[in-house]
Length: 452
Image (cartoon, rainbow, N blue to C red):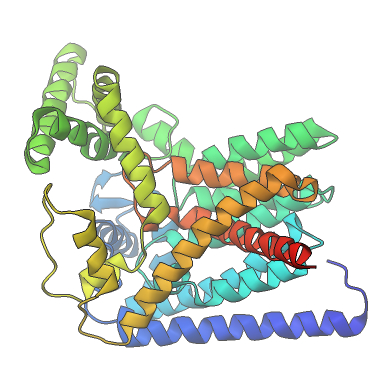
């Protein structure tokens, strides 16, 4: 990045160093005052499985939940990163190292913004400052979860990709490598790769060379995992989570709506059908199905429910996408810090659920401002994102930025069609933040022009 003179270059450098330091202090303060206690850093179900994997890796049992039974339900990136840190520093020490890495997210957001909007310094500075105190980034930097490390790698990828779209294509191999690492942490990398390649083909010269470079970098990282799965299961795939995921969070809600029954009953019915389908396929094949084949049976069953009840599926998908867009990161804080969490039923109103955040009942009062900040940032982000899209429609200078950012935002949100929540918005959050700040800055300039 070029600056006008040495003094401005020094000022920007000092600002970014100070921003990273401030970001680190905020995250460490939150971790040592809340996240480190009890199971506050744990995501139900997910963290327990990652802990099993880490323990087995450390015990030289391989990548498995149980010794001697290799698994492909979880991706290997996060356990392989955390395992050596866990050996030397323990779990809390490993999470502190994770926090240090996550503290660079505001810096990376600054450079993503500069790559997409090189003439709008104010957007980059404001977005980076907001990222330093963003509730989602602060909370998940110290969580026993994959989100922030995957975001770091995705941001590195986006910096290099957007610079390539601006004509600076010298680091596309590194972009592919960064996306490959992210692909082994969160199951979104191959979708991002396809979209990125499409943008490169549409916008860049020497298209095939650039596309091939990104693909080579990505394959360097992911090919060992794909080869391992092919040798074990006879197919090229990343993980077997989709089978159970779509049955629990897409097929079961469809049955719940169709039969007007409780979710747990619908879930049990769907899982029983899955077991029946597996046994039938095993009788046809005259052998036990492997983990991947069972996953395929689950996906096929979920697809059958969607095709049989498209309207019910559409209603469920719209509700989950809304939960992803408007969900609050502080929901998990209310769950962790409130011993009297209510049991919601189908008759529970939206207003009752909203009141849990407007009048939060927590044991630690310092969390209340955090929850209100979460509400404020979420509302401003959604409105700002709408303004950004509006700006792209009327402002030719911003249209290219909308074309580059919006498809990835839609992709990340769209991937949560079966099960939505703020946590699943995390890969899109940096791009949403940059877009929202740009939208608000555009509105501010328009108001200034109208007032003159």
